[in-house]
Length: 237
Ligand SMILES: [Zn+2]
Image (cartoon, rainbow, N blue to C red):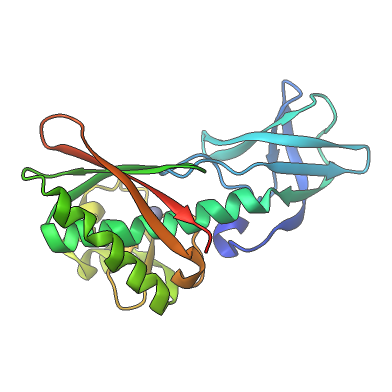
């Protein structure tokens, strides 16, 4: 389990450079940098070594390892001890957005039975895609105040790792997901607000939904056939 999953609030972490490719693609022993995946954009920040420091400008998963693209090039080398320093404002906003996306998706799925088909969580604007035949904008809009009421009340966000058989017993959605997983995947990480449904998720989340502060729905969009889209943002207040 990478450090960013173990503790989403870890802002600094000391580790070692395992490899450096082309002077700029750095793999570390472990990392607090979240790689671009699952609709959540990657973290940014710095790697500080004894001989100098570099900016982390992209983080991705390639062939099972997490690669940090850094600049300037040719500063770090294999075996260096480095301190990872996250751009915490960026990450924290993404954590709040990701937990908010789960709450919004919960209403879209539970109250109108739509299927979530994707999401893209950015810094200014976030997007959730879902599939729905009848498009009732007013009903969808009414979820904004419901989500904000939940946020105001607060609620602990739990996460746990279970084996795929256990996950399959939790909900029909997780059962379908577990069936579709490749055989080499034995475990699933589940995230959910206490009292609401658990979802399979590998992202970073806040500890309590109170930390989201407030959600604002920006607009709904018809993206053809049954494809719908909601754009939202997180407000600080
Ligand atoms: Zn998620």
